[in-house]
Length: 177
Length: 177
DNA sequence: ACAAGGTATATCGGCTCCGAGGTATAACGG
DNA sequence: CCGTTATACCTCGGAGCCGATATACCTTGT
Image (cartoon, rainbow over all chains, first blue to last red; front, top):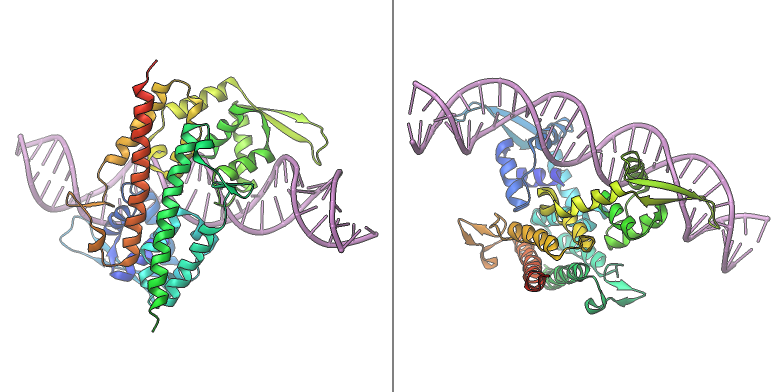
């Protein structure tokens, strides 16, 4: 999840760690920013794997910056992850939304649509959260008000996403070429 | 997060591991069920910590069941976690929704309302996801259609939850006693 | 003159969780 | 009679992340 974000941001332009941390934090919104103890090991990991190279820059800044560049291997890895999300990426909201944030890097509309179709298929399968014995659970029948809230909120989210997915798929697939 | 769910379910009635796994899976809906390699170590951990006791039961079942009972310490731990959620519990969607699912175990409406107030305060702080330079980001101004979708979906979720929070707080606080 | 806060990188121990594998028995359909 | 599915528990290695801690320089306000 973090690695995808790093690959995605570096695909836009080379960045140093500190800047990367700020962008990842902005991406996840109000959720707590990622810890240094998460980011720097991730950078090192990806550098070792040959997806990144670093260029040390003695600039005006307080400490020397290590500007990170995506290697061709790194770019391939980004595209692969976007193109072939696994079950985890699709089913975990955090991972999915991160993926969505960088889906534009997959340039062919058909490849984008294929990913959205997979998410759609996932969302459309009846889950034990919304259904019981094949019939949708009615909020009025849930006696615990907190679980009722849970159901209401989850339904609103799900519907918003389904609506957007259908609209976007129509646009992507409607105008091929 | 898993521990809270275990404490919550066992507060309702004693259960064995396998049954617990099914309930946790149902709680998280269509999201993949938790792995055995997560559940059983968690049980052992909580047993060692004195929050659970196990009663081995030679029943009709294929394998002997270890029925888990919540200890008084375990119950206190559950109530403490519900009453005093930390920043992580409030800001991480998964943790928050799990907490909400068991909030009814906190019996005083005022204590429930206090927790909802904290979530409300968290949701109401302007985040970099929805705002830029103090003004709300308009979906039409976002050029990437996928980020646009992200914004739309996140707004719908946020609004659904805020609406529910306000309604529920009015009910909980409006009728004290 | 000095404190506070932002810039910038890094390591360490610890925790939770996952995936893969292992062990058994019982029930049911072909 | 046998394979599959369900029940039921468990261990191991590893990934990923967090919180705390450390270092050190620069800018801005008081």
